[in-house]
Image (cartoon, rainbow, N blue to C red; front, side):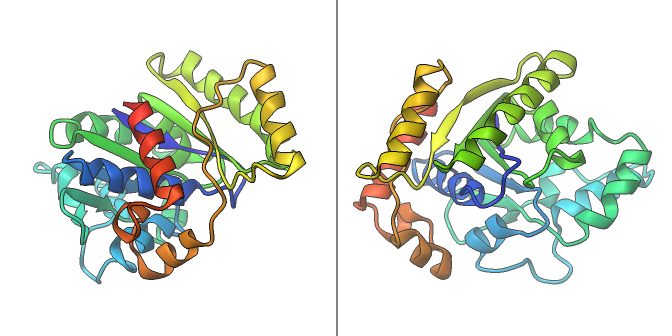
Length: 254
């Protein structure tokens, strides 16, 4: 069940949501992989405590292999590294993703990730994909190979306007390339229940019939500590309100 976490607007909590859902899956006993396609590598740093060591494989190594002919290519799982958390592996980001993008596009490698996801599905029970805040080669590759898309929303008017464009883009990819792709829902992040604007914006989305998921993820400074310590919330503070909301969201996704 590859699940893409995507929003074309940055700063909406995409990496935080992807990483914490992956950590929860692993903590619940599922063999889990997170693929970090964003060259900023926020999910990589969060789950591995930094970038991978020199010489270790990354997602860029996987894409490198697709550009060179070899009789015995490495299996997709070779490019994943173990995290400090049991049953959780990461296909780490790399700053080289940007320089590789033009080559991958010109060589029409858009379906290589989909082929890899099919292979990885034999090893991992849950696969989460963190994507760049742009509809570029990597995001399209992920959406063409995934079974679901999760959309973070951070309760402001700019996010709302971007949301409609995003939904249209995902539906177009579904129609043209991946009929199995489902919009699993909109995740309301940094929600402040006592503030009027977040309440109004979210209610308007619900009234429009958009797939807004419950529970809403509350705003919390605890998540900053989680980032600094490279410990997902389920390991840092299992009883925290944000952790409980993330677990409830994870379980709802199935």
